[in-house]
Length: 525
Image: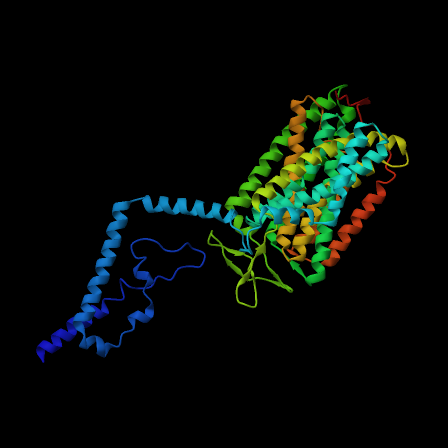
């Protein structure tokens, strides 16, 4: 009995001392996962520790062996961490960076269906939209332009030829963006959707038509903010009672647009209130200095925005899946924070429904290159015929053509993309295409053209027409109030489009005036 009692006490001492090394660490939800020498022991479930005491007493040697094994594992893990030193931290850092980069180029939904062949890709591009029939107007516009025909006819045929090219640019961009994440896809759609606008602005800058450069770019901002975003809200509202997206991203985009408008309001205020207080010939150099310095700052803001979007806070730019009036539940991001993430649609067979490719990657890339080249040649004839069109029709305002007509034509790709993805319930992507395109124009395209004009010795400034700047300011405020809560509906889109129509009507009879600086016209050579 004495030996049995001593054995029982010895076993009990082993049993009672066990929970200390095997205690489960309760981690805070907002803290990163625990790491270190006790990581393996923390994986043991509490159920594994609840052995019935009578059984353990009868199997003292087994319990003692299990305790010794666990202690050896703990000591081995501690020794390995001590010998390796900082290497595991470096590996985790590399893995974290690599996982973030892989996240950017990993589609949120799987690719479904077989890979398109070259023949099927070409057929899909030709049958993409009925607007492709307007491709026949491209060679016609070239022939009319180089044979010096009526400028009105040249302008009309050139505009009709640009519309399908913009749609094909949207198709190629969409097929490449499907293979990436929503953030990268939105950037591609915004960048390649602005190609036509950048081509038109570049051609006008080369011809020293500075008013056309400014009006076409500011018209692109108005078109994306009011027309494209409004149509996306209306089309999405037909299917979803309430459209939801990331409110923090919407607020950030609104703040960036306020920054952009501020960079345009300051030169206008300077011109209106300080023009008479400067000595003769001093205003233009000061405006150029202000514009070029502001251009550098705006580009740096855009670079910081890209870093914010793709690296430091990319968990905010994950897809949001719309299901009726609610969005999918939030999941953990790679940063250990809560973020809204899209959930693929589940089919009747229990498998997620993926995206279906229409073009393979080589054909999509070839389509982008060819469409861009054709758009450049066609836009050149469009810009050159603009002066003749206005001269032949004095009742048509040049400002109306450059502010309304040309941006609507050049934004056809973004318009189509935003409406299509909004109908699918991807309102974060629709916001990225519409508002993200405006941010890219205001923070990158316009400042870049300012610096390019500086290198070409052309006096392009951030001093836009005062009425256009005021209209843009109130448009940005309207969009900010519409999206800052992260929710929208079809009525918001209806209001945005109504405001755009009012702006179009107001500029129909806008008189063409020569801008003067201290009583002298701006000389551009």
